[in-house]
Every structure is written in C-alpha cells, then in structure tokens.
Image (cartoon, rainbow, N blue to C red; front, side, top):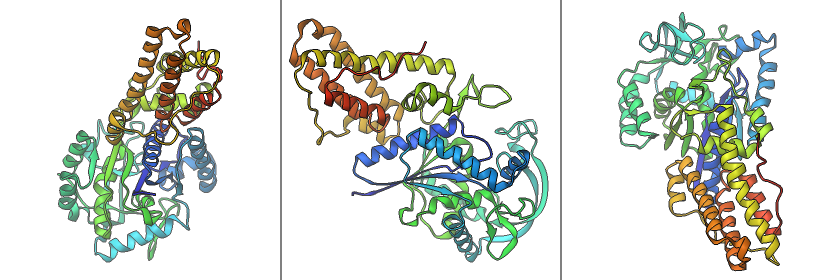
Length: 461
C-alpha cells in the first residue's frame, strides 16, 4: 500500500435516534475514504459513538432505563445506520469501552496534568445540557442557546478541574492562520480565528455525582469525571499508529471543540495536530433544523426503505453543498430521485443495454485494470467538492443521452456506435464507485452479462 490516510467522523451522541445529519456526515466521509483507497492509499476510517454526559443520563431516566441499557440499545441504531448506508469504516469506537477508549483518555489527561496545564478551581456559569458545554451570556440569544432553544441554560456553581486553554491561544491561532491546521471552508477558518480572540481556561471535569458516575474518572480523583468533550475527543487517538488524522469530518455546531480546544490540548500533551478539519452544515427541512416540535423530522431509515441506500447517498452527496446547510423535504427528495435517478441514470442504462442486447453478439469489455480517476473529477475530489464531482458524472450521463438522440443507433443498428455507448456507460459505472457502490456494481455486472436490466431506480408516483 501507499501513503497513509486517516479519516474520522465526529462520534455520534446517543441520547436520541440517528437523523439525516448523521447520515450526511457518514456518507461524505465514506466517499472520501473510498476515493482515497482507489488512489492506493492505506486508509483507516474511524467512526463511533459518544456515550457519556448528563444528557445521556437524563435521556435514560426519561425512558425509565438503566444508563448502560439505554446506551447499548441506542448504539445499535447508529450501527444499523452505518450498515444500511453501506459505510466502509475500518473502526468503530465506543466511549464506554473500558479497554480501548478509557486508557487513551486517561493517559491523555495525565500528559496534560504532567505539563502543569490542569488545575482545580471553583466555577460559576451557564451550562447548556444540549451542548454539554458552558456558554457565556454573549453566546445566548434571548437567554437561550442558539443551537438548543427548548430549554434555558442553567446557572451552575461547582468545583472542577480546569485546562489552561488560554496558554495555547497564540499557538493555535498561528497554526490555523498558516493552514498547518487547515479549516475547510475559508469562512469556517475565519470563524475560528474570531473565536480565538476571546478565550478563557475551560472546565475539564464534572463532579461524578452530577453525572451519577457515568463517565471516565479523572486519574487519581474518583470524585470527578472527565468532562465529556475532553474525553470524547481522545477517541481519535485510537488506534495510535494512524495519528495524526489527515481529515476530521464534523458539523459546524462542534467547530469550537475541534478547532480551538482539541488542538490546544494536543499541543499541551505534546502530540501532533490533525491536518485538516472539514466542517459541513446542517440538514434543514422547510428552512429549519429538524425537530420533533416543528414536525419536520425525516427518518433516514424510512428514506432507505422506500428509495434504497444509493438514492439517499445520491441526494446527500449531490443535492447538498458540502460546506453549507442543505435542504431536504420528502417532496424535494422524490423530485430529485425521479428526475436524476429514475429518468436520468436508470433510463440511460436501460436504453443503452436494450440496444446492446438486441444488436451485439457478445459483451463489451471495459478497461478493468487501467481505469483511473483523473482530470476534473480528481481535482474536485481533492478539494472535497463531492457535489461538483457528482455533477461531473451527471454531465457525462447527459452527454451520453444526447449522443443517443443525435446518432439514433436504434434505427441504424450501428454496432460500433452501440459498443462505444456501452464503453461510455462502463466509464460512468466506474466513476460512480466511491459515491454509489451498489449502483456501480450493478451497472458493471449488467454490461458484463450484456443483459437488459430491471429498472435500477423504479419511478415513484
């Protein structure tokens, strides 16, 4: 194998079932991982679940379940989403794993403590349970967290351990400013640089009784539990041989933790920084974040059941711009499915292969060994503009459709023209490999057998 490529998603918080935002991040990371494997790199793709914090304890209590029982059941739903989306992760980390995660987290704490960057003090401030974080008054909008409006942050006073975040502001700003730690996109980079203008030391533990002992104990002090965000971030260090990460995939609401706190802690612990942080937006419905209160939640499992895995992958990858918020409604989804999959790609495969089956004595053999992702497609993938890379593939689909209309091979029965159409269809099938693997396999199998297929994407009325 060639050079290493280590990619991570944020680990999913298991207080509630998976939603389309989780699906978006997984398929974006999966396409990048699959593409890097096609470049013959040694890829390690890590995902997992974040299972500690007061929000988890409260969610379990609301369901009248033991915390561990609640968490174990919830984790299975996230694993099912990964399976249903055909995600090619190499590792799955759970923060409740006392063999893999806890030793890493506690070793990380000890390194920072040995550096003299952890101290004990009293703290008074507003705590947002939704964010599992303290928020300042200037962060609040009408007294509420901008991301969690359903409940006011509570004023808390307690004795905790603190991390000397303020000591590392200059170093973090310099590394982000010169792109040693590259934040994608540029607007997110500017956002982080703005955050770094006002940074104070942060609380890095909670009293164990507050979280009912559900969490990683502070080394040498069982009365305190490591603050969920501090220990959760250390998941990326497992397995250690792949660190530093080439790419962290995260949502914009956790940018501060990954681009301010995480690099500072790594510097304190004497570890290398990740190379890039890819920050995607939210999945919106009717212009708003999905919430049960607004009745606009779309279940990813329902979309997969009705339309199939690759239809959902297609929508999330092409119809949503990677670094911005994206809109999904059931109406928009069906419209895109019918236009671009049923009438677009699916119809093209049927047309070409009907002509091939009727006019060619044997299958057309594509270049199975030397096919490479190059040119514009590679350029866009290297920029992580997955949407534009898919636009390129769909442009090729349109070009092939236009060629059929111009040359009318169903009339001329010109075998050379039909063979060329099949070869171009083969190339489209290969291009789809990192994006829609099952569809890619089906197209290549159909060409190999020279058989008219069942519709790849049956039209939805």
